[in-house]
Length: 121
Image (cartoon, rainbow, N blue to C red; front, side, top):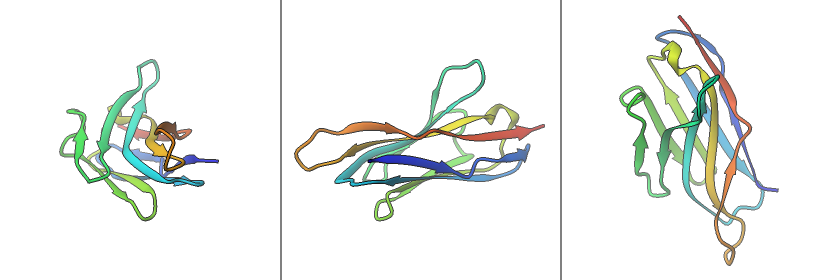
């Protein structure tokens, strides 16, 4: 069974840093884009950062210059390095990936269960 599992969420003070990791497991033939989303209480889920399988990245304006997304294709992992954290970064962070289970099947979108990031002022 293909799944994504996030880790690294924590409670940190404003100005602090965290590194989130997400590992894909199960039988996976290939992975296209990977991304991090977040959802704060009472708000819609929003894209934080994405990365293609060739390493091209995209960031939400609110995190540019503070967050860095990276991936390790051999380990089937995507990471999110976060610095200069602000209280408004508080949210549940979700990992997502478009993955192929077989060579002949189409890609499917998978989501992790999320990891909580809380930034205190």
